[in-house]
View: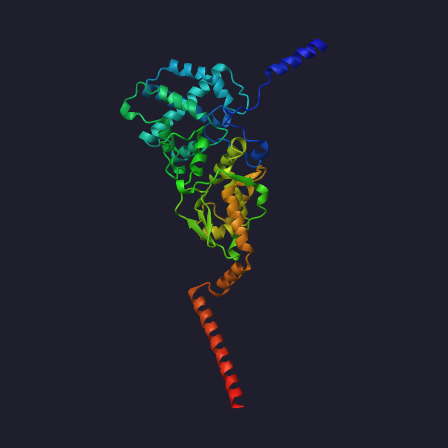
Length: 417
């Protein structure tokens, strides 16, 4: 190859080079080092949304259903197709910047992908809100599951705008915001009953919304945004070790937020978590989003770390199940232990929230106090049941009375002599 041809090829390569993720980027391919531990947790099973999994053979069955919903959307709203296409074409550059990788689609392919997928979601949410589910339960659950996977997203602002453009011919009595329809559709995860009325929370996509649901605290107990060096936490005892050290576990029924862990007076309060088939996928996708987009606000990752410390074996799981902190829908405790022990593989962190840092520090200090362990041992060995407590008290009284009798006998002997 001549020198001039080589230089031309190099310049051509440089012209195709694009800057890496911008501040607008919010939808990511999960990093390989994390994804390889459970590829299925990040891969849609029923429906592809967005460009990353578009065209996958195993998802083709839903493409015809998307077109049916797209047609229903146009017939119901009487939306102007030309206006919708025009809007999408006007924001294509902004759309592409939302993704962490270059999208290998032509202009027309991308416009159709955005329009059909957005219309499908809008019609799905509208139908769910006004008519209930039209799919069979297994299919409905599968679609809902796929819609919160990080790699399976469209930017929220795009769908929301297409929704608003479609409202021109819809009776005002039937108009609800797209946000309201979205919150209703994902209502199962909205334990704190958020409604976003103040408009002060930005939603980037559905994975982001699910994370917001899980982050929400009551106003008086929201976690501090302060973070400290992870190296400050050397170790946190497991549930078994904490129990042996005298820590008592109690389910926190006052808060619907998973992150609202409290420790006071030797009692560790933890909100209840239902561990079911979707739990690992849900946590993995929220952690992956934090790894890529919220490295300095990785509160779900912090929560996972604390549970990873608490749960080492099936015995730890059984302790938390007995205290109703965990609701185990997986069967045996070892399955739950393996779940939490595997979530942190290749997850990178350098900081942890000050809330959890203080919690770990207080728990470690409590466990190092030998007086607490002694009390726990006495309570476990001699006061396990009411009958055992009564027997222990009776034994102590008998011992005291015997000792008093011995002392009296000695005194009598001394006086007689």
